[in-house]
Length: 363
Image 1 (cartoon, rainbow, N blue to C red):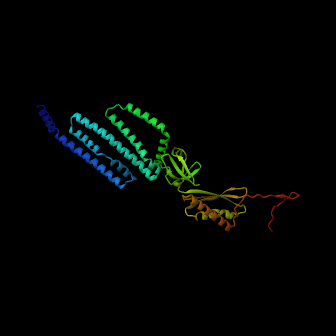
Image 2 (image 1 turned 120 degrees about the vertical axis):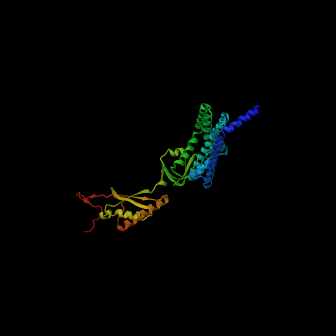
Image 3 (image 1 turned 30 degrees about the horizontal axis):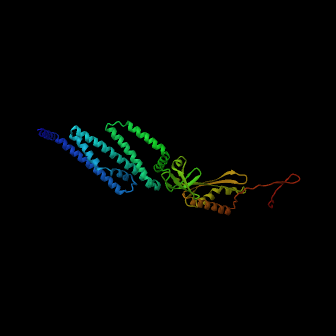
């Protein structure tokens, strides 16, 4: 008789809530269909961008990791909301949804972060960090799943204060033990995201100038202009003022020279024209100024300043040499003499009159 009463109660409950059950089933099916569509779109985005170089590829990689278990639990939770299920059953479904959502959220966050880092690594072609992706994946996975578990337990009514304190103390201990490694790792990630320089750029810091060959997990390696390899810790490198010569639109070059005081004023007034012809005869070079800067002890000092859009040091040197040679040839044609340090001695005769140390020109 008890079994019959239970069957009647269940039957009456179904008859009473049949519209609610139908609405819940429709909503659950719609949610599962939307999640399936989201995962399919994510998989399509991953197929179009397998290396994850675009934002669509990064987001698609995360969405493609949507699990079937989460879809089912999300549909069941929606069904429970509309169907007015018994309290115990509804509570079990709520607990299952909290757990599934926390874990799914951790998966989404992990894949998004790793996709973002992987995109930067691929753009920078930094083989050192590419090889360190296994360690980065482990650190990111531990961090996001630890946070997900804490949030999950907190939503389930568990007091997580002691757990958070324990994790904090453990994190501090690990951080102190490996602070050098972590500081260089985060510095390497800062280089990738902030992009003060990238592989192939010519940079200068302190007295060192070199081309970036490799951005590694702990160090950055540069090839100096003199040929040797310079290795600098990422943290120490970012503490310095870095000049990225590769990002310069043009390199400003200054040439100083002097001409003799015997140079005719008319030629001095045309000096800028001579300099412009010498400078702009080279591709990518533009004259800024060529002016007299001082009345020197033995010369009329000039300063020639020009901009060179070349990026390579060898090309800069060739342009500089060509401009100097063009000036020498032009000055020779115009009979302009370059000055060099000279000193004139005046000799006095017995009667005190000055005797010129050089022959006077005939009158």
